[in-house]
Amino acid sequence: MKLAVYICRRFIPVFLGALVFFVFALELVDLLMNLWKYIVNQAPVFSVAHVLMLYAPKSLSYAVPLAVLFAASYTLSGFYANNELIAVFASGISLFRFTLPLLLLSLLLSFGEFFFEDTVVVPTYAKKQELQKTLLKQTSTKNNDRIVVLSEGGACVYKAEFYEDSTQRLYSLYVVLRSPEKKLEAIIFAESALWDHLSGHWVLSNSMLYVPSDTELLRAVETDKKYEERLVEPPETFRNNTISVEEVNTSQAREYIHHLMRTGLPYAEALSLYYKKYSFPFVLFIVVFLSIGLSGKTRKNVLLMSFALSIGAAVLFYVTQMVTMLFAKFGYISPFAGAWTPVILFVIISIILLRFART
Image (cartoon, rainbow, N blue to C red):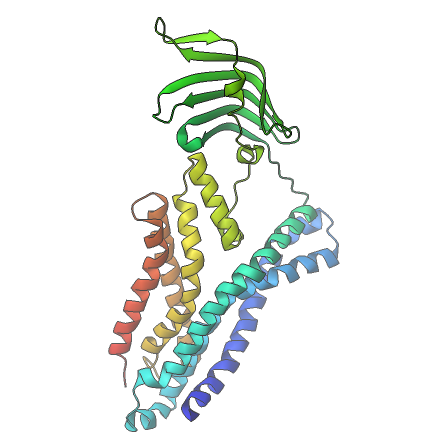
């Protein structure tokens, strides 16, 4: 118990100091990247300060893994450099048992990181983005063009040239209607379609209905109301509402992925990013595990070597994760594997490093 308290007392001050440093660095980078834009748009100083304040939770989320890695690596390297671990090992305590409090602390921080990201970082970062766009006079629109949407499990296919969100109207609309057996029932063309909130379906304007015929491939007839009443896909589906799964919480991400699946749009990248929300917090556990295996490699320049090992290990993990996420995006591996492979791989590497660590 005394050893656990001792190692935590050595670790926590370094961790907090590194955390403040990395958060400050990230805030400074964000400010400098947009400083000229703020000046050009004459953004008020207090509004810019508000943007930085809203960005603080996101910076904290980015900084925690680096701070944990640096603090663990520096603390353990200091133990080796000062020969403090000789007494520990001589008393029969293994390196794993000695560093177990750090592993448990990092595991606790991993769960905390997940909930902090989902409940605090996501809403504050969304407000930061919105305020920043206002200050920089950047506008966005929900209008959309060249839309293809699958509905009713593929039994109804919409194709529109343009969707105007202010009027909730589709232009140059084609609708292919199929039976449950996927046989063609009809094709509808309309110059425009207006969403009717009362009836809950699209009202067609200047429309034409084409149905299969025994004598010809398709026969033009007057539009039948029973087909029009099937056009119940809501306007939200046609909006330009592409979002980044990384910038929403888990429940919103699930809804967005279900929307992509339902409308037949590619969803592999979004699903891999959704799984990443659960896997990424465990990077805190991994970096401590890595630092335990990497510590003691040198007795000189402990601060410099700890910093170098921290940055090197973090870069290697992020590069590996970037590669696996790209593989998942293009379908070479599953979205689940894209998110969790780096975690599993680096846990194995950490175990190997711990096995051959100097004790």
